Length: 194
Image (tube, rainbow, N blue to C red):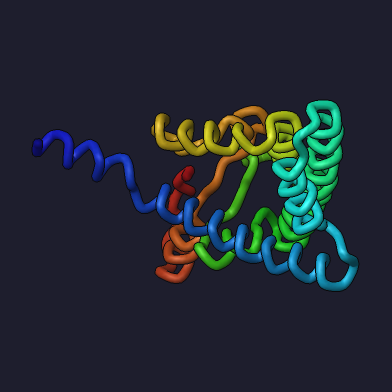
């Protein structure tokens, strides 16, 4: 029993909790942005997709039910794909504007950096954009499932990197550790990957 408690404790490290908190904050920001888009533009319209899905159960004819299912799936796909596009825009723009941070990462003291510290700013920003595009592509192709795989992968490796971090050559580091070292007058502490 003690070993199991120790394994669970090692699973939920400070770094992993901070990444999950940053992700949760970004989801809340995205929900706010999507709500504003729906209120002002009427899109993405998940309510319409839900109405189309609810209409399926009212239909008894097989062919009509099949046609209504296709309408419902198309309505959901439009709303989902637009939501992913808004999320991609949010993540890319905030990372470019905040130097590798989203709102959630900034509030949690995290930053995305290149695994090659000697790279120039333009190449690093390209890596950040590639990282987001890989995540977005997975969300569109697999309807969100890869995000769960990415989180499990973060829990399974010691560097706390998701698969999209490995593909893009990026890592998430704690900014507070660097700032503490600078404030104390010493050399900057090495950035701990999250």
